[in-house]
Structures are given as C-alpha cells and as structure tokens.
Length: 91
Length: 250
Image 1 (cartoon, each protein chain N blue to C red):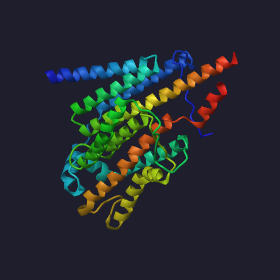
Image 2: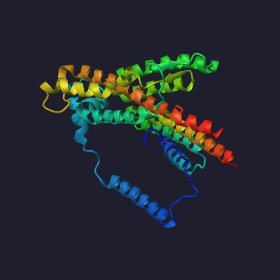
Image 3: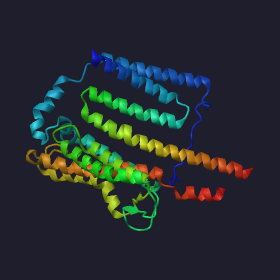
Image 4: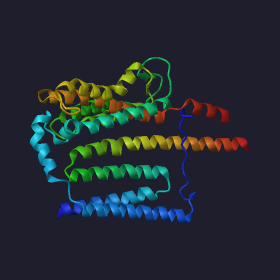
C-alpha cells in the first residue's frame, strides 16, 4: 500500500509540475519547474527499475538540460536589456 | 548568415495565430495524444522473446549488463548513429564559440577572483565528478551506467568550472577537435577493424567483444562530455557581435 501511495504521488506530481511549467508566465519559473519535473521523472524511472534510464535522466534531463536552458535564459535577458538600452538611446 | 543565433522571447499572451487556428492546433494535439494512448492500450506488449533472446545471447556480448549489451553490441548501429548526431551537433555549434588567441583547450584567468566558497566546492566537486564519470563508464559493463551517463557527469563538472568564470574552454585547438570527433572515429574504426571476421555490420569477435566495447565507450564518453560542454559554452560565451552591440548602444 505505501508503494501505491508513492507511485500515485509521483504520477500526480509529474502531471502537476508539467502543467505548472507550461502555464508559468516567467521563463525562469518555467525552467526551474522543468528541472524539478526532470528529478521527479528520475524517481519514476527508478521506481520502474530502469536504473540506466534514471541515471541518464538525472544527469542529462534534469542537470545539463537545465544548465543549457538557464544559459539561454541569460541570453534572453541580455537581449532584452540591450533592446531597452536601444529604446532609451533613441529617446 | 549562420554566424550567430539571435534569441527572442515569444510573448505567449499575444499569440500571432488566429483563434480558429489555435483551436485547430489544440484539437489536433488532443487527437494525437488520444491516438497514442489508444494505440498503447490496444497494441500488444513488446514481444516477450526479445528479452529472452538478449539474456540467452548475453554471454557472447562481452558485457554482463543487458542494457549495455543491447546498446553497444546487439544494436550498436543505433548507438553509432547517435554518436554521429552528436558529431553534427558539434559541427553546428562550433561557429558559435568565441575565438581566443593561443592553442590551449582550457584557458585559466588567474586574475579572475572566485568566491572562496565556490572555489572550495569546485576543488572537491570536479575531481569527484571525474571519478564518478570513470566509475559509471567502467560499471556499465555489468551494472547500470555507461558512456552517456559518464559523459553527462563529466560535462557537468565542466559546466561548474565554466560557471566559476576562471576557466574558459576554447574549441579551436586541434586537441579540442580530436575530443569532439574521437567517439565517432573510434566507433567507425572499431567496426572497420572487426569487419574482416564479421558477417554483420559492427559485429565484434566474441573473445574481444568486452575490450572493443570498453574502447568504444571510452571514446564515446570523451566525445559526449565535450559536445555537451561545447553546447553550454556556446550559449555562455559572449559573442563578438554582442560586445559590438553593447558598445554601440552606450
């Protein structure tokens, strides 16, 4: 019974995090939610006994993808700051 | 045309699509999801003889972990193509990286001050990640682990080094290019060298299979780690054009 509770919690958590990540209005929030989603999915792979996939998901899905997304997010912020600068210099 | 990637944030609330098109998109996605779900429920499970086949032939594969046996021996063709995809990613990303004078793969900026806590953490974390990567590679022969996981962990160490600001990875030197193409080159070479005694593509002689797999995985780990790190540094580095734009606006 506790195992069923864990599985239900994990499935509900993945669905909730996926919905929140899609609905987040700020890019940074969406990225953090996506990283959390990756960690929960890692737990699900582990529960399914697919340890190879779990390790890959933790390292690539949750870790490196989030680092790449955050780097892209920083580029976006830089681009936005540059656009604001240009607007001000035009005024 | 291809020398820089411009990122723009899309404004989700002001979609350029018309209402009808958006509803059509939603209906199409829903139908696709429902179709996939129905297909999964209706279709038979994977043929059970596949798992039995893997386990009965496991002794000939040279490794004890069935996942590694499938990835690097029974279906190594798929993995070869995956490594080739990574090579193409590296080719596409190379123009994005900044060009630095000198021929060093890692440039150390000793003037750059690093937060003492971060420096202390890196001193422990990076060697630990290197050892963990080597362990994951080695353990992949008989337990969960393997080249992709090992490469990702090592790339993570590189990302941490890069984020400290003191280290820069330069991808112009010959050594860097060797790292980026080693995985594909060794994989193809191994297949070519074993071709004499093989009846199928990428078939290894049974007595050397373990060694061949280890060599391929070692090269693949190096390439996976460097391509992932290249992706990250390509996004992190300030482009020469960015610097020019910043100066123009001031």
